[in-house]
Length: 145
Image: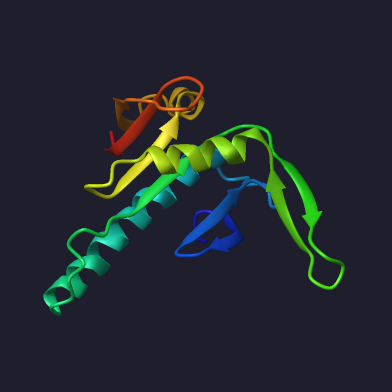
């Protein structure tokens, strides 16, 4: 939340966050804020997992994947009138989900699409990845440059 995220919804053991919708981020680029938040989440999960392992829990093969995409979204209200929620929909949302799905399953990863990678410039170290079922390339964010 400190990076300006809004929780859109919880999805089982995951969460969908929005940046710049509905609250605009006025102190910098919302794409950079999203990547900074993702890297912080990746590091926090690593520390949490280390604690679980030191307690003897068999979590060695559990990793997190974060997919980030930047583009137009459509805010809408969905659901039955007795239980409605505001969410965002569109190609950008589907693309981010696909990036997350494509993420490596043998380590904690943050994956961004080509458009977001271009927007980040040289602020972060990126590694181009094999893209399956997505438009354009995808990149793993290694860390801050």
